[in-house]
Amino acid sequence: MAQRYGGKFSPTPGETPGQTGGQTPPPRHPFHGKAPSRAGGRANAMFFVPLALVPRAFASDPTGLALSLGAFGLLLLAAWLTREGLRAEDAWAARKIARRPAIPRKIFGSALTGAGLFLAGIGPEAGFVPPAIFAVLGTVLHSAAFGLDPLRDKGMEGVDTFQQDRVARVIDEAEKHLTTMTEAIRRAGDRGLEARVDRFQSTVREMFRTVEEDPRDLTAARKYLVVYLLGARDATVKFADLYSRTRDISARADYEALLADLESNFSARTRALLLDDRSDLDVEIEVLRERLQREGVHPNGDMRNLGE
Image (tube, rainbow, N blue to C red; front, side):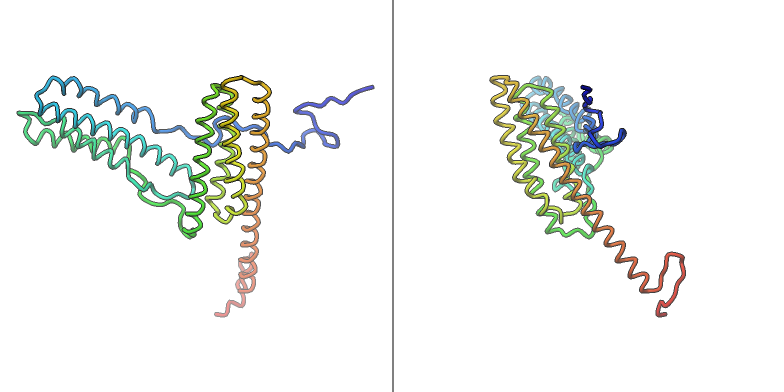
């Protein structure tokens, strides 16, 4: 008896070819929704530049030693602040609604770079002017290379700050769960699992962005961001500890199936939240149209009974 062939790309019974009858969305590209991080390259190179001061420090008198080591420390601190400032700016740019960073790290990095170069330029016969020139040039060039920190909130016009603060607290806690998952799965020593967890986290962060744009969605999403994500974190920690010792294939399959189920549920809830937002938009449009019609404004541009 002939048997119907069924496969990943075959239509289900009752479905015509060309339709997508499955409930799971197509797999995401590994770099979907990601942008290159700027907290590298030039920022990391700044950690190596101050090393040139170490030999000079131990070849100087006590005053020169103190000045060179002080400059070394200031320049390292400036490099660290610059890198953290770039990371904070990337996080600010990734969100449609975001508060400006509480600490202007890149600005402080520019100032510390100038201070470090000032100390490095002080010498017994250097005087004050050359170190001051080094400080000004270092501050200006650092600001030109890395820019300033975001100095304003983004997308906060008309947003209930109390609700937004509630959302921020929940998302910050959820981000901690994701960080714990990342650290745990690295202990398993499996690059494929690391990539799988990363794809799941991208799906979760789409829900983050949806809730940030409309804080009213927090009530519907709280169970996912608190309960389900906490369970995913605990399951990841336990799996990583087990898999790193035993390399149990069945445990890996069960864990991947859990991630697939969670990813499907998070995606479905995010789509539902977006549909609710669309419904709210349709209601607002209809209400506005009715008001315009009552005022005598019609789509054809005819103006009547405006009560002038």
